Amino acid sequence: MSKGRAEAVAEACGILLRYLQEQNRPYSAQDVFGNLQREHGLGKAAVVKALDQLAQQGKIKEKMYGKQKIYFADQEQFDMVSDADLQVLDAKIVALTAKVQSLQQSCRHMEAELKELTSALTTPEMQKEIQELKKECAGYTERLKNIKAATNHVTPEEKEQVYRERQRYCKEWRKRRRMATELSDAILEGYPKSKKQFFEEVGIETDEDYNLKLPDP
Image (cartoon, rainbow, N blue to C red; front, side, top):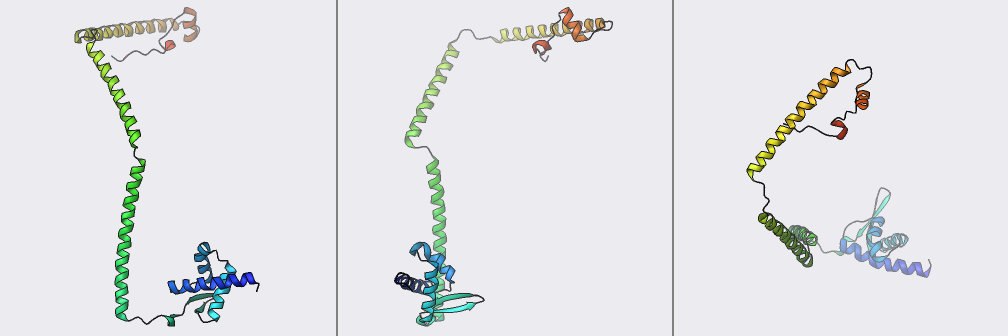
């Protein structure tokens, strides 16, 4: 083994031994490599070699599960824990779990509040918008003032007169249109050409030619 590789394995041994003792749970070589590679930059070969070396030295235990080796800390180095101690630890775990859940909920609330504040207008933006709204309001106020001061308002009587005249003209429009239709239909009964050709020769212009539509009564 080269000096550089030996140093890498020796360094990995120290890191892996501390990790397995602190976690005190079984891991495969792939698990250990995945968990520590980013933080410590350990290579896969160095991790496998270090775990095997630690197991051979009796500093950790290994066990085969099918075709995979599992490594874990030597349990004999830990003090025996009584049932009472386990109950105390269980109670601490429950309390810490509840605290974690409470903190997570508080974080979610604060994240939502931060998002709301981030999306809100800043003070300069609000001041600018207020000025624009004031300017718009002043324009409407001036427009309303001019409307109230105008002397050319249409009286209800004038409005009614315009409405009656509109009805009269529309009625006359319908009457003349009906008369023209009846007359043209009578002529077309003995006319050898189409209705369109007849209108073109005579010079008749229809409402449709100018996209005109008779208003509803």
